[in-house]
Image (tube, rainbow, N blue to C red; front, side, top):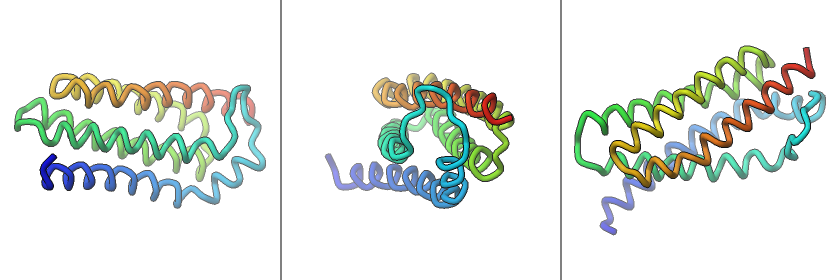
Length: 158
């Protein structure tokens, strides 16, 4: 692969991981509170699972975005990258809403919007690069599981 392509991949991966890292850093106190005091639903994984899973998901997201970015310029490419950035912003904000503000009901609504944005991104990516789209399926599945966890936390901690 050409040096320029590697730089593009690296740039998108680092950008995406940085967004996730900043979110994690900003919610570290809220996450600590969550792990110690909040009642969790059945099937809740141990706290250590989340940063590992998210690091992998952000990697896959960055690879997918790079693949789309490297595709020929088109309306579908522009739409895909726009949806990517919007869903990434929603992803970032969900952590703040859930962990820092402890607004579990609102976070669930926000997560539903995020899920729809991810689905739109997966579809849009598919119009540009099928592998980029398929790389987002684990993300969509994880956010589906996160919705179950979010709903459970909301119900158990009213």
